Length: 361
Image 1 (spheres, rainbow, N blue to C red):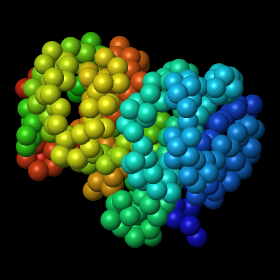
Image 2 (spheres, rainbow, N blue to C red):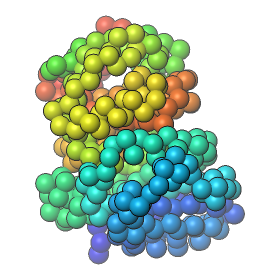
Image 3 (spheres, rainbow, N blue to C red):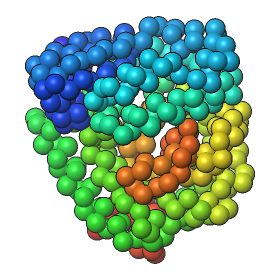
């Protein structure tokens, strides 16, 4: 039997994440490697009376696009894609890369142009029901330094598919996160302190969101949008990040009045610079998230998983989620992760929320 079990996984995605209903049109994107899960999702959606619209990506498709694309391809999106996005009811993306470094050789400026062009599509998707998940592949296992079987079991635990009742397990985490939201909803100022990090930002008047697997699966975080002009200080992100297959490590950012005024990376400086120059809002924060999923006990090089690790916080450059009250509008949304499990603290108005990776009573 495959791990995770594709039928159980599909049921979790359709019932907990999408809450699929009869007559809904659901666009499902992944790669051909995720065929077992895609077929199970197709069957599960049909059984619920929904319409599955499968869009599997071919090996080499992204690299081939950038190799042959002309300026008009980088700076626009086809009208057909917009029409499809506007007509469907929900979106499901399943990350299943054949090569986590596929775009490492692509000019970061070309990728930035594509992100900017796709902003209209992003806005349409965010206004509807959407979910993102992951299917274990050899490439991801290698990125994590694990054998495929070990990585697949790791993903299964992160999804709570190793529990007798995965949906009930997500309800329990949702309840815990609800108490955390209650602690934070009246907070004015947050402070993050760790090795190379002393950053303050304000969140008063903003709404905290309980991310309990409805959109990201696996999930395990609460998040909000900081006041856009409030971040002040320095932060070092010790967890490596590989957006678009480009390895970025040791990012250090200095903020003044909410704006990044200095940015360094031990590796991936060109990508960092191009991202910050994508648009004016890319230099401001759109999100702060607090990881709560202790089923994730190590970073594996996948942002979807790493940002949920219990005992970490993450900050996103660029776009805010409107439901938080954030107003930062950008083509960028890049989550960077700060590990607090070895001497770090997160405080809200001077009260310790998390210390050494553990939540305080």
